[in-house]
Amino acid sequence: MKEFALIFRLKDMADFKPSPEQMQERMNWLAGIAAQNQLVDKGNTLLPVPGSAKTVKPDNVVTDGPYTEIKEFISGYIVIKADTIDKAVAIAKENPIFKIGGNIEVREVLKRD
Image (cartoon, rainbow, N blue to C red; front, side, top):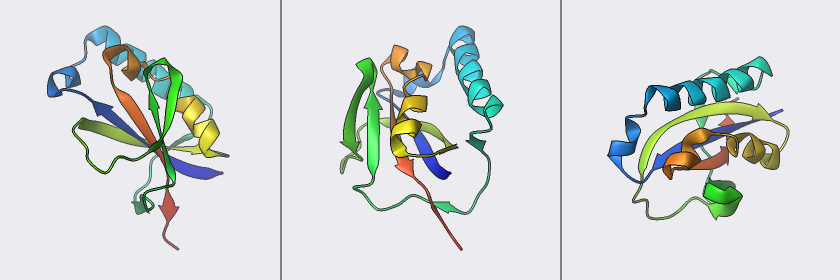
């Protein structure tokens, strides 16, 4: 399986203070990934060059990414395991960040040998 970074972005820093309900939704989403043994927690990873990424936006809109100019706030990231970038995108689509106008960039992770 490959590894993918899911980079969480918000329009405004104020959106970074989620309600307890929003935090619980996010924790449930993460728990589902962990339960399927797809959540990776290791260091020494590098994001690849532009052109090998996708961004998932509200309403299940998927675009090629990343952007050359970022005006959004990056609120964090996780690394997951999936067979393909499309399967990683499917996992990203389930995140509750879209309810508050955020988006997720999905990038394949390169590993150092």
